[in-house]
Amino acid sequence: MHSIMPIFGTRPEAIKMAPVINALESSPHFRCIVTVTGQHREMLDQVNELFGIVPDHDLNILQQGQSLSAILTRTVDGLEKLFTHTRPDAVVVQGDTTTSTAAAIAAFYHGIPVVHVEAGLRSGDLRSPFPEEANRKMTSQIASLHLAPTSVSKANLVAEGISPEDVVVTGNSVIDALLATVGKYVAFTDPQLEDLATSGRKILLVTTHRRENQGDAMRGVARALARIADAERELVIVLPVHRNPVVREALLPLLEGIANVIVTEPLPYGEFTRLLSMAHFVVTDSGGVQEEAPSLGKPVLVMRENTERPEAVKAGTVALIGTDEARIFTEVTRLLRDPGHFAAMANAVNPYGDGEAAGRTVAAIAELLGVGSRIGDFTGGSSSNAPASPAAPAGS
Ligand code: UD1
Ligand code: UDP
Image 1 (tube, helix red, strand yellow):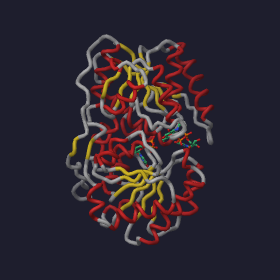
Image 2 (cartoon, rainbow, N blue to C red; image 1 turned 120 degrees about the vertical axis):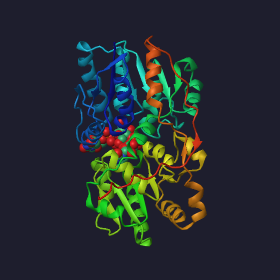
Image 3 (tube, rainbow, N blue to C red; image 1 turned 90 degrees about the vertical axis):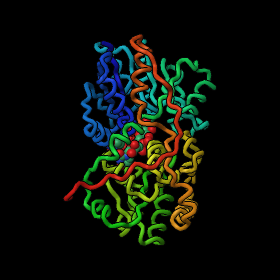
Image 4 (cartoon, rainbow, N blue to C red; image 1 turned 45 degrees about the vertical axis):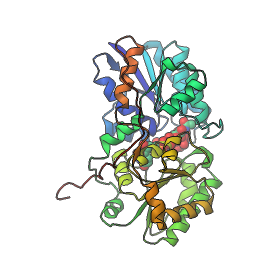
């Protein structure tokens, strides 16, 4: 049996790694040594709990107000110590956080092959998103196996000189996680959300956390949301707020206490996907939410100038709107008031996956380690009917 060490540290990595870990665990070839850095804490533990993942090692690196350098050095240092007594046959990292790049560097320095899940996303601007574009490019330089979610991401890697032989198009495992979760009824912990579920009111779901949007831009987002809440009294804006104190300081003073704005703690993934399926549409700067919402036929307005996820923009379900306060107000109002525009964006598409990414990932790792061969690539991008919203159980 080969030992595989998935290493991850933040909420989105945990969500996208969970299906891969579960598929590795059910393969006769592999034994998982699950390692978390603890770059996030509550937001990471929430996901592991949902998917029944109990880490074997926890570097517990989180510090309030942590710098990028601290995340990098504390991860490399922790893994350095771990690798001296636990040497896996391969390390699996996901995406573009500083945990994932630091783990890739630590493994590479130890001569351990690096498998990169969600490889090849590129915005084309090294400074946006910061530091994620640089992180993922660095990981691509040292990975042995590149698991690209789409043919677009594979093409990006090949254009940078990565051998096509070392790239497998798997689809994004976030769609595996979404499909495993969204049909299951989960009660909201926050009673305001349970009341909202039966109110029939239109819901605008908002999330924001990106480093490059923090500060003035994020305060502008909050002002735009307050104006929208005032102009559209029947609408309810729901904002599950990231744990980052910098994000909270920008949003909460301007949005707490408004009658039709519900500010919540970060939601457990099952509750979040239920809320997503209830939402009329989404305003976000999140990567993962950009991938999930199109699958459910939910239009997405992305508060960024660029995206490394062009597939859903091309499909027409995602629009880039930046962070200008007046523009956010205009674009949200247009989606609320123009049914033709809304219908054009509310088409359910699955450009990011078919729910089989974890199986392709495990097969590709088996090939890398000489115990199997890869299976057919994800060829994706199909339109489909959105999965039904989860129904409340009888009597609830
Ligand atoms: C990180 C990733 C980003 C990813 C995001 C997902 C990097 C550089 N950034 O950004 O790519 O999109 O996660 O959410 O890797 N905090 C807590 N508890 C938690 C989580 C965060 O208290 O469970 C607070 C801490 O004060 C921490 C701060 O949030 O210092 C920022 O967390 P950090 O991981 O540094 O950055 P994110 O903005 O979350
Ligand atoms: N998410 C969640 N609870 C929340 C907000 C988001 O479970 O309150 C999930 C969401 O469904 C998506 C992921 O977290 O899968 C995205 O994480 P985030 O936006 O923090 O990071 P990014 O994807 O931008 O790196």
